[in-house]
Length: 212
Image 1 (cartoon, rainbow, N blue to C red):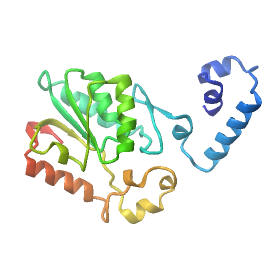
Image 2 (image 1 turned 90 degrees about the horizontal axis):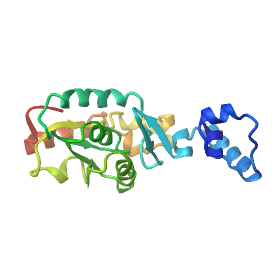
Image 3 (image 1 turned 60 degrees about the vertical axis):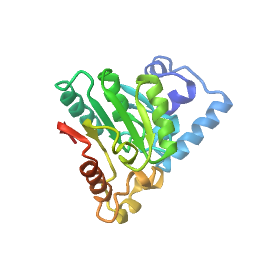
């Protein structure tokens, strides 16, 4: 994958043309990437993208690399929305790369999809992905649902929030390169989840029959 990235081709093309040679500049770039990969830098950061569901997402170290397990959340969301109104309202809290919000909007174009993150750097990544696959996603910067309390009710509230206790999160190998803010769930791992549920309750933000 790294070699294909350096040569500007896909892996199938690389296999089909093994006679390709590297320029000195390409060889140096490839050696640098291999060295960084050996230091456990995620390949997605090295090449700037991650294949996820049916998307080719742009990623940077400002966001957690989208995990395959999160595809299950998207599938569950799409199945739920298929039975809702013509224009269901959806929010992705802690959107990161925008994977869930973009995936929903791409496959449910009539849905009104919001995405919120506290990190402006993460929102820049998510906006770039939305521009490619789902330009209609509406972005807000803020703490969980705070930017939307009192303004919207939602059929679906999605949140793949950090759930790892702080002490554990800091010691994880992935914390060496991926953003700690996307891993650290507070002292017991439930701090952000508890705050989100409190915001939903106080703001009465879930429509009848909605899903959190």
